[in-house]
Length: 406
Ligand code: FHN
Image (cartoon, rainbow, N blue to C red):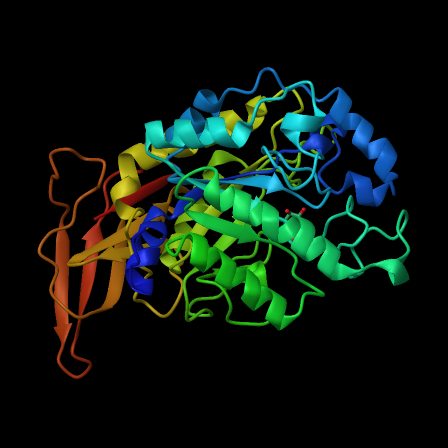
């Protein structure tokens, strides 16, 4: 067991920039998102029946991890248990889990762990620690199950000590090192209980990161989860942050939702987030057979193709040092390097960058293997003590939704 400083502990994640979120559970069988049990007030006994036929034989950990890799993602966060309370892993804490309650019997978390190790991706678990529609004693907040269970009879410690904590312990002891635990919707949980959970995680795996949604009290966890699909303003967060984002408009598998983000839009959002210092956790919702929808996979591969050319300007890059947004795109930096990410819809012949501390030695298109220098002109303003750089841009590159000038 290694204990590292907070800064070292989070470095892999800050450098990673791009992760895959996977919402997968029994709800996939109904094809209308992960909130279906709540939306339709499905009685627990009826919902449990979904498990009897849940048999995702087309699930293949190698394919999923391979897709994350092809997309240029560096970590995977998968729903080990979502709000429906169904554990997608082997659990002794309760039989409502994939190995005991379904004909599938396999443990996908184990298969993913092994495959992630093989392919060099960090595996992380999502765990819904407060909302659990299946458990009669899950904490009383307005989103818990009030159609089956009488709120006044709820006894929170029965859920907390009997299910939530034991399952979190299982997740941290059954699968080797876990990159991070992604908690969600902590409304109704006391500060003491959140702190107890943080302590539990730290005691079992000190290097495992914890997101801020472990508590609704500010400042907890190792980094800030922004709101769903929320990209903050420049400098809004003083600590590390991440935007969880959908590819269409749903997290869990949905047959109805066909409003998809296009690859160009995803690339722009990724770059925009990185230029503000954040990470993007982009979601897929596999179906009940175990397949990631084709429309998701196609989009992810296109993002990965772009990253395979321009990844240098994304992975390990820091936020833009400029305190304003550029009309032509976004900026990321690394020591002694500035990357200008240009969107192609507003391609100009000349680009000007103001407020540089140092004179620029050379500018080139990052995809150009020969690094042919672009024509530049620079001037120095002694009063402001800064340089202005003008770059003559080449013709707009074909099929490139975002071109990076280094
Ligand atoms: O209620 C959940 C939702 O189903 C989904 O898991 C998202 C992902 O960030 N979190 C909650 C809402 O914020």
